[in-house]
Length: 93
Image (cartoon, rainbow, N blue to C red; front, side):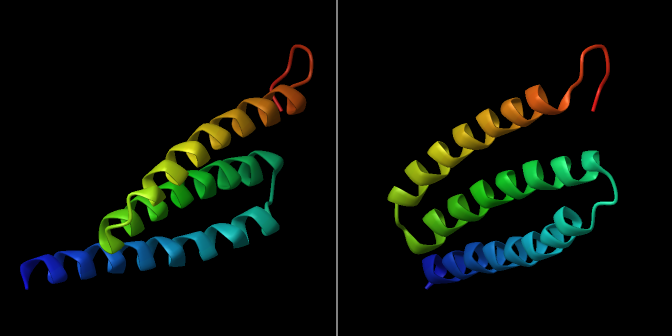
């Protein structure tokens, strides 16, 4: 009984993070600046990792944690790559 309630709490938290992701999609599309869009994409990637981790606990599926770890590493590499290609010599974005 208590385990089912705890799983429901984790799944509810994952649902709230999905709502946050929808709001972040608006920020990615609307901007208004490149910095806002880049930050929103990075937060969206981190949000996805959190959603996967919450689903792993809520559904008792450990493979989601492996996927979340790989996605976190890819999100970090993407942030480095975008930063490298958007920084001009001597300037920032």
